[in-house]
Image (cartoon, rainbow, N blue to C red; front, top):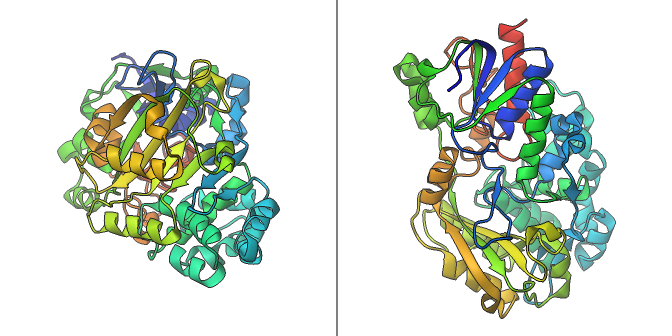
Length: 475
């Protein structure tokens, strides 16, 4: 590990750590980012996991929050080589009688939902019109004084409803119900829980706003652009530099740690007050995931041709099936028919696979830390809507919670959300505080997805933590 004094040391090079580093480097401070692995990026990295020439996103794969992030948009990452790929449609949700499709156009989406065109517009129209203002409001700590109170109120009128209540009140046909249920299931919560409805609204809003794109060449392109931006501002990144305790760090006036509360307890040890240690110990994890990356000898043979246009697919069937899967997870059970999230990059990005070949990225929710192999159940779900899929598999690479945690310790137990997204933990993340980024240690700040506004590739946790550090330490 490099010795010498820096103004700021950032531990961890995920998108939040890099966002914090860029903000502080652009403020004229000397910044060093330390990354334990051989490449930067945290859960935003790509690799040839199956066969040569097949590029898979090891962690995140579809990036609506990155495309819509107020801070990332301000950085002009396209100048550093980031190229967004927009599939033909953001999302398809296969059903036995034809897929529900979310188009970029709100009107086109609503028109495809038949009897629910009016209900879908009532839910989404006002917030889609104000998506930039709403994104700015929700991607910061709660509560706060809003800069766009009217836009936030438009969102809040619906966001406090559980997804199930929104579905029952406004949507009546199966296509619309399944479409919204799949969006809400990204919360890892039962659809009867708050704030599952808010997740459905936000992801729908982003689909109709900035879209659900992904970077050309793999998710690593986001990280590469952030690292280039940081270096352009004078910051440094050192890989293969694991940090075991805060005491071993070189001198710095501020330290920002892009790690989970559990990891922070290990880094800080007994230097933390007992009460703060207890609070972090009580912080709840989200359920985990089981992930499979596929190398295919052809495109997925979807029954509904419109699914070939989608970058992302929600594969589970009806809204009731989605709800049953998420309820089972919440109860600690393995669902027979899991809610599967899939991304097909190669039809829209030829750099992802050899000519004529394809990739598929897929995962499902499982209880935290489960060691159950979900391969057969995931593939059974895909086969329901794409018969013959298994015959096209050249190779597969699986990762359960144990493998995910080994790859990235922030994903302990398979939790990709930085902690449960319950209503309380969206307010107290990871503790109830006016500035949850501050820790009891002078000059030490948390900046991971376990701080507001939570999970997703948007960098806003790092941005807000860096602002706090700048005001506290370098004012």
